[in-house]
Length: 133
Picture 1 (cartoon, rainbow, N blue to C red):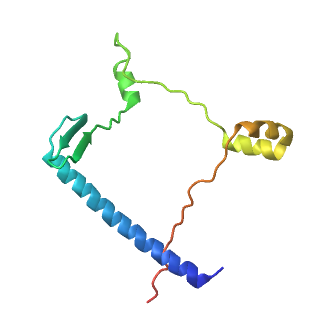
Picture 2 (cartoon, rainbow, N blue to C red):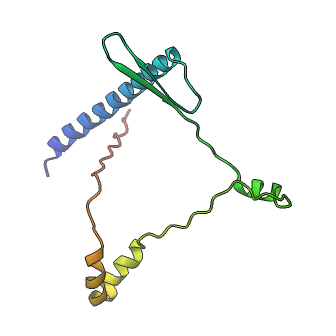
Picture 3 (spheres, rainbow, N blue to C red):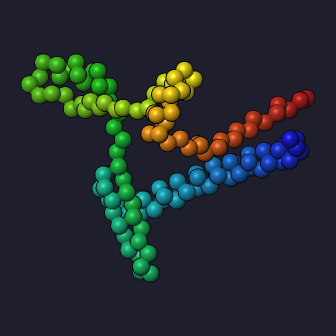
C-alpha cells in the first residue's frame, strides 16, 4: 500500500466532490431560472422550441407525504374508504440467503442458480485529519 499515492488520490477525490457540489448547485439554479421563464402546469410538462430548434422541456410535479394513520382514523366512520394504497412486496432475505450458504450448502447450491449477485458501485469516503494546533 502506497500511503503517499492514496493520500494524493484522497485529496483529489475531496476536491472533485466539492466541485461536484458547487456545480450541482449551479445546475439547480439554472434549472430554476429557466423554469421561471417558462410557466406551465403544476403537474406535467411544458415544451418550448427556441428559434434554432432547441427544445427546452420543463417538467413539474408534486411530492405527497401523509400521516396515513391519522387519515385512516379520520375516515374510519365514513362511507368511503380512505385514499390509502396497501402494498406487499417480496424480496430476497439476504441474511437468510447467506445463512443457507453457511448452514445448508446443498440447498444453497440449488437456490443460488436463481439469484444474481453483482458488486455495488464502490464508495470511498475521506474524513480529513483534524488539524493540530
